[in-house]
Structures are given as C-alpha cells and as structure tokens.
Image (cartoon, rainbow over all chains, first blue to last red; front, side, top):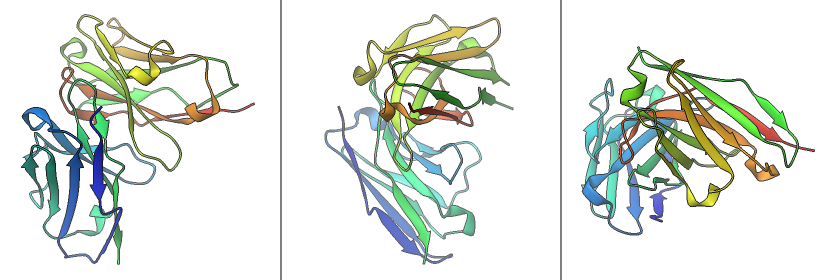
Length: 107
Length: 119
C-alpha cells in the first residue's frame, strides 16, 4: 500500500496569502496518478487537481499542482475566503489511498 | 448536470448489515464506475472499493474483503454498497463517487450517508 504523508497538518494564513501544501508518497506514484481534493465541513470532497497538475472542470486557476515520483505540491496562489478548508492528496492507482489531510485555517 | 444522490442515514447494531444506495443522473451510467469512500468522525478518507457499472467488475480494499459487496442496477442507474458484520469502528459517513475506471480520479461525489453502529 502506498502511504501518503501530508504536511503541514495545519496551515494558518490570511486571505490573499499564498498556500503551499506538500504530499510525500512512500513509493513512486505511477504515471502521476495523484489528485488533490478540497473538503469543507459537512460537505463531500471536491476534485481540484488530477494527474498531479491538471485542474478539474470549473476549478479556478489560483489552484495549481506540481510534482512527480514521490513529492507533490498543491499551491493556492492567493487565498480567497472560500478556500479555507481541509485538503487531501490521493494516489489513484489500483488500490487508492489518501493522505491524512492539511487544514488551511484563517490566521 | 451530474448528480449522485445517496440514501438516508442508518443506525445499526453491531453484527448487522447495512446497504447504502447511490442514484446517478446526468450522464451515461454504464460508461463509468462508482467508487465508495468512508470517513469516520473527525478522521480522513478511506477508499473501500470500486465497481464498473459496465460489467460489474469489482476491486475491493483488502481490509474489507469478505465483508463488503458492491453492486449496480443499470435499469435504475443505482449503485449499492453492502457492509456486513458491522462493528463500532464502521461508524462513518459513506460516500459514493463517480470514477471513469479503476485508476482514475473521483470526479463527482454523492452527499454522503451517515451510518452509526451502536448497541
């Protein structure tokens, strides 16, 4: 099983600031089968990024993903009030796994 | 628009079974699969398995093998997830999510179904 470790656990930032979230895999993620999801309280997760760097339909361009192999990053260029949430990375190979999440909170 | 609408909350006793439904609309049901993911209270996301709506092929998480069964009814565009021999640590919100095929991201999600296991 591929274990995904996200850091930091919590990120305290102000609106307008840049957020950088990290996801490290215990082994190489094949063909960049790496996605990022956003989850707000009481809601289902929402797909943001797939293939490590492709934005899903309707996702604003302030969200970007990068990385390959075992190290991946989600960047939110300028935080909007609606971006404060928990973010999960996921590898979606034959046995998908999720990271434990990074909470982005208002400072 | 794509929608996945799940059945309502359930309360079950330890040892019982639960069956959650997920009704799809807004796309060709048999062209995609459905993944199931659960989230225990205050915890992260756990993948449970995937089923092809085209041919019924399944891929279950090893941890749940023998306790979970996923099925589809193409006549009603509905997917089902049954979990047996429930334990208290099965208490969670259960989500269905559209997945093109095994090895693809989960692009649309249901609203979630809370299953509480308590004596």
